[in-house]
Amino acid sequence: MDKMIFKKCDDALDSTKVPQKELSNGRKVPTLGIGTFGSDRFSAEDIANSVLNALEIGYRLVDCASCYYNEKEIGEAFEAAFAGGLKREDVFVTSKLWNDKHNPEEVIPQIKKSIEDLKVGYIDCYFIHWPFANYHEPGCDVTSRAPNATPYDHHRLMSVYRELEKAVDLGLIKSIGTSNWTKAKMKLLLRDCRIKPVLNEMELHPHFQQEEFFNYLRGEGIQPIGFCPIGSPTRPDRDKTETDTCDIEDPVILKIAKAHNVHPAVICLKWAVRRGQIPIPFSIYRDQVLSNLASTIYDPLTDEEMDEISHIDKKCRLIKGQVFLWKDNQDWKDLWDEDGVIVDGRNID
View 1 (cartoon, rainbow, N blue to C red):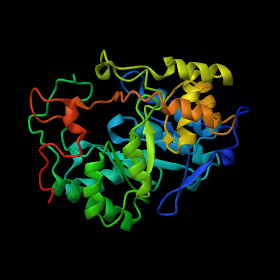
View 2 (cartoon, one colour):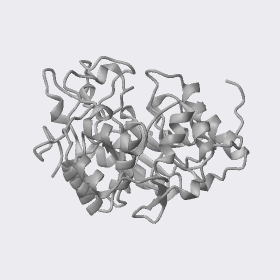
View 3 (cartoon, rainbow, N blue to C red):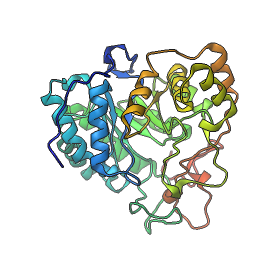
View 4 (cartoon, rainbow, N blue to C red):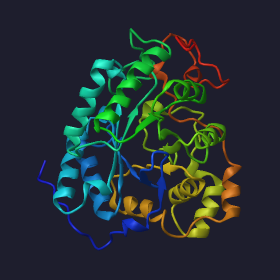
């Protein structure tokens, strides 16, 4: 790809006006970031350009992952931004451990690889992407199952988590995060960990508010980050089902959007920020990237509007995770411990 250049732009927002949250370890993170998962529909170069645009506009949180297969390209965006005057310490960069690296000896080498690919020197928060070691090929059908897939194994998970704790000690990462967790699994982790996670990345949008788990996390000092914050209309087709609902077509969201004279997607982000989660919307389009960040600064929702949105939760999970199941003819709900019990859980005592 052509050499990337970081440049000042007339439509940039003052990044210091974007509210920040203080995490339980004292580090601070912006209340909205940009996601980088879009490999089913956009090239790695498209996404890297979007990251560079976002940094120019004023974003200071970038959510990455090794399994998005674009960290090297995003690294060129960071390299250009730092060469152009942006300070590394002013950007909060995340990455994630993919399921095929759930072996203790592979964790720190994978962290080092992401640091090298992203050209960032260290990672602000490193997540375990899923609490399962069940790998699937990129772009596979939702009916695919790894031949060696297993249910949740707490001893194995903790052996991986211990390596993240070592990575904190070594200064490779500043914080630990979890992703796609459940309350039942989080209770076990908090029981056994030495360094608590500061962030939990989870699906959060007006039609899937996860109120009980959300409140539990905040009570434990763990900040929720919400993916699919506008209902992910561009999520991979394989993740779509006939029962899915659409947040930005909800009558309440449409009414509030009209009152604020903005796109319905912006209302979803305003709701997320005021509620207390950190949304990470994804877009490669500069006008959307700009309006998403502006939603954190201007024209917040009223108490009445927040209350209205609190009543439209349809408990509609969009990212169901079927490919991580471990048996044939299994219900995807088995991944999410909906009755508070880990299905087929191993080594949890």
